[in-house]
Image (cartoon, rainbow, N blue to C red):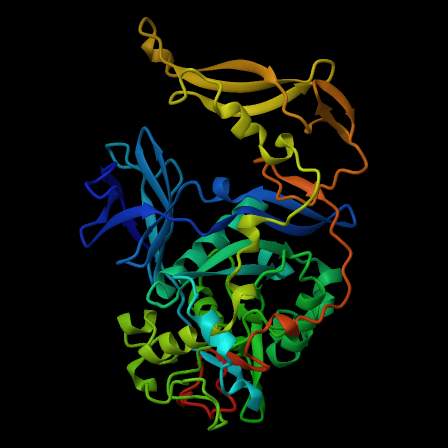
Length: 531
């Protein structure tokens, strides 16, 4: 049964800059602002029978996202006259959501429900880590390059959602918020990494429809996804779409279907995920995991599979080749129950073993500068980029109000005849004479000259105060920054060979994650345990 709670804001900003929220007598969150989204989030989807790419402001999506690293909590916090509303994860095994308006206390505080997340026991597969003999020793140039490893390596993550998953969300913004919570929760686990510290960055998502899903998903019957057959097809699909995805470091398939797998010669529905080990920034840079959409049940699986991609074997396992310099995890006990084990003994199940941390350090530090470079923040270098392309209407308008604190941006419009931008704002006013009327919304606007290349119509932009057809030489391959999502046609791609982006990993291995529904222990053979 869910637990009924009434969260209260104790401190808006504590001495260390955190927001303190009392959830219940056993849980008080010390929240700091979280950031997990790229400045732009690209979403590939089908509209009207054609494929489009929409861009969303990452800053807008995560504007209310907070975290408590000690409690392993990631929540959205919104404030109103009645207090605070929380939604997300309040720990490794519980989620919180507000009740409707009717569920309020006598003091008007919003009631919330805390639900336990279904933690299904795991069974997964990994494809092993292999290197050619020539990779066994580092050249002098490679040794020098390793000395320049950044303190923090950002891993750009793109997520593909199948129909069974994304169809459960009312909007794309909700999908992106949900993914931000999951990726940020994984980051709280990866914060234990060091030299370099690894941080995941969500760069976008694909909302697959049937025409896309049929290219990578093997669905033997309704409601099930076959992991062993799907993962190689998904690898091929992700490589084909890599440019459209913004050249991420890894691509993850989040499925709302029940994952089935081979185990001991039989097919079982106990699968949870599968991934290629040590495959980050290579041509095998994919994994997949099961998630009950909206319930965060796949958060642990996502963390586990991404750790495989970043180089971690299951605790107790390691590379089969004795000459392989990959450190492996044979010196760490499976029975201690860390993230890369199926054993769940409580807190340790949400922490990486020292072996996992060592393996991730080894693989990421060998991945090379091309992998460490963050493309989604710097954007692509393009010609003919002008101010109106780089500044969104909301940012442009935000500097205009005199009373910025009490002004809320609504929308912007452009006068075609004059290339004047009308910035529409509103504020709420409570009358001293008629307070019973409550707050009244008062709209108002500011006007300013449009920047060069701000859009002013259909395929038209403002140039030197005149609305004209967009010049043909202008390339709009920039990072879009308009806070309102915009659409562009997806670029045409061909089959891409990505092996040259791999600095050290020649062939990766897949690992499979499965949940336990049967009585025997899933301490599987090394060729089996993969995710």
